[in-house]
Amino acid sequence: MLADMTALEIAGQLVALISLGFCIAGFASTRDDRLMLLLIGANVAFALQYALFQSWTAAALTVLVILRIRLAQRFQGNVAVMLGMLAVSGVAAVLTWQSWIDLFPMTAMVLGTVGMFMLRGIPMRLFLAGAGLAWMGNNIAIGSVGATLAEALVVATNFVTILRLQRMRRRYPEVELP
Image (tube, rainbow, N blue to C red; front, side):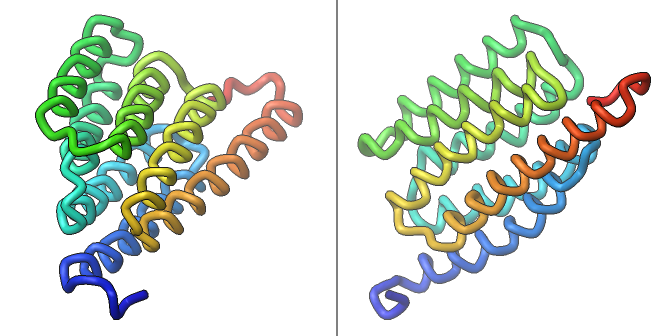
């Protein structure tokens, strides 16, 4: 498989593995603020990886994911800002659209945006798991082994963290948890 890849695609595979470390550390955290910070680092690497694979819609939307994370932290629950982010994402997708594969990053962007702006704790992580599955579909379609592995581990880690949060809620019902 590596023999059939260009130098840019091999570089993309390596960059995707770097993002893996950020993702796992983020989703293993039960703190939403730490999750968001580590997701910024992961998405910088993912954007570079998508550019190396010449998957332009995924690259553009991933750059917007970085902005979305910052905006969602500052404007949590703000429907107008969320709709603005979705509109900008739609424009970016139209300008960079290449094929049906671009439906995957669009789906991921919508789920992630709604989840980050409107939800917290377990519900947010469920939406982010759906976004992760959509990104995984994109990564399989473009042939990125590193990013597919990263998203699979992100989704798995995310579900483990959801289970941890549920146990914490049952064990400490008097404490407000995410």
